[in-house]
Image (cartoon, rainbow, N blue to C red; front, side, top):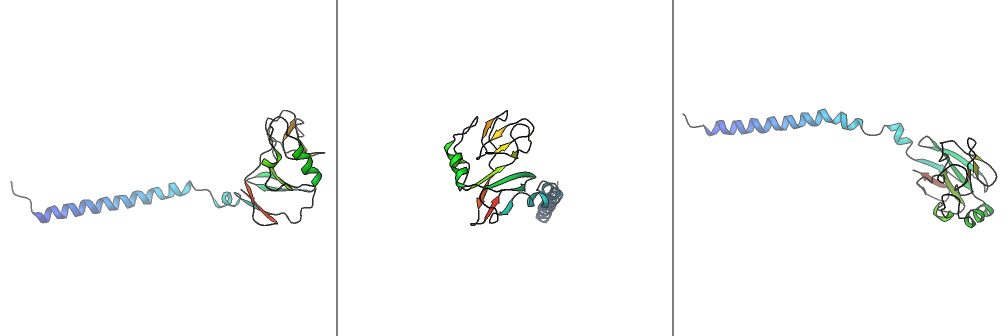
Length: 167
């Protein structure tokens, strides 16, 4: 047997390292489209948040906007509505009004009934689900009916005196 030439050993090591690097680049190139396809599309990203100008909503009025394909009720509550909501502990799913609002005069809730996913109508002192009669108060808390939970409060923040961002 003939002893190995050091140049052959260096060449073999170089070819092995080059092959490993090229294979690694190939694997990354092949998996990039797969990983990229798991990211949300631009239309989904655009629905992730909703910016709302609340300056035109007068006290006592409600404004409905879409957020992630769901209706969101934004209510500019009057002092009477705030007092009624703060004095009531809630019904089946008790929750203090101050835990449901960031500013007492503004209520922001997802307008989907927690029973069957209907959209409640504004009625009297809150909302009424037209499908099965669940009643929600001025704070979106379930008072009567088969709905198990209060109307959901989405994540939102005030970004000025006249704007909120939902999501």
